Length: 425
Image (tube, rainbow, N blue to C red; front, side):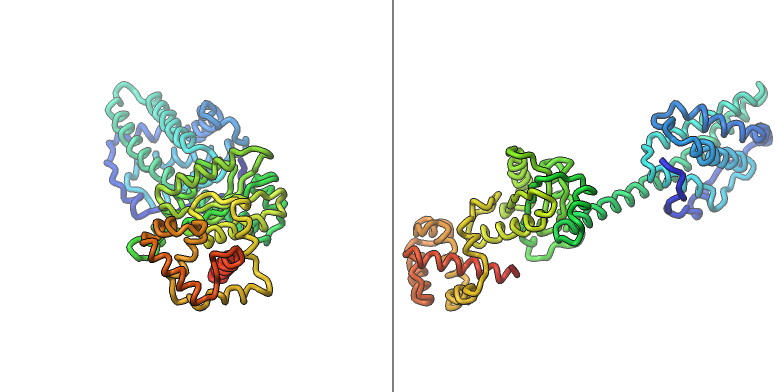
């Protein structure tokens, strides 16, 4: 922990804090409190150096933090209490120092429970000082002061907790965005791979997982910002649970990438991918696809990410059912989908049926079902004779004999290249 310049924190709320209603205390109570004013510095030093030492984590604070920052905060709290005894109505900025310190402790990583216990311990020490100062005839005044002290403590705890939680949320968002920037830079090659790897805590070889949700809009409406953020949070929670704390990710409503360190020969990471898909199906539907590609070094990650994206695209275009896809699963389809000088001519083979999506889908499913007309009919919910009629129409319009090895290979290549062009691949 350090004593660097204090972080920005939410501005105090004087309109609420200084208008809090406190009772006017008796003359005896005010006189009793006034007798403690000379002990403020002594009590502050005692709390900062002795009374707080029993709190978890406090002993690890640097001496200058205890002697300067903590002691100053305690003195402020003591003097604030004693002033309000004489002047019950608060002033704007009464809680500003408490808020600033709460934000600083949040940035330094002090647990909230330790911070709140330090405030409660200070209240107890102040109560002891008032009790020791009171005479037998001032018991009523002592009760007044304790009631007043506890009321004030409630307001201070509220301000401290509110600021601490807000600062933690800000810091968490900043850390998350920084990690996203590192993953983005690693995937697109805009950052030095070794630097990104080191900051993300990754080691090679890694498994780069491309995730495609294929989530249809509900009731024909686009996913709203609120629903989108909620979806990404749920996906992220599933990734954290199934891929482990060492996994890093870059996700959006369409899916994204997950990168996790892989141990050679260990199949647990692939099982984690299967578990992740099973979890995502519960709130993303059946059309969840993953592709897993190994990157041996940090420099291989961008290529692995592109390959994973292409594997999912090819599997989908080839009519394979949703699931976890590996390169070996789509080896032929992947090869046929690579573009070269012949690609446009192959895609043009399907141009005669471009305006007939029913024929295109029938061709895709028929190839995926290994040209079994009955299986194709079941998948499409059609009569086998209807499938035969569509296949005959496809052959008539395109000139492709999909019953032959050459014809089916050309048709598959045309479908893959056509979908690649549609996806911008």
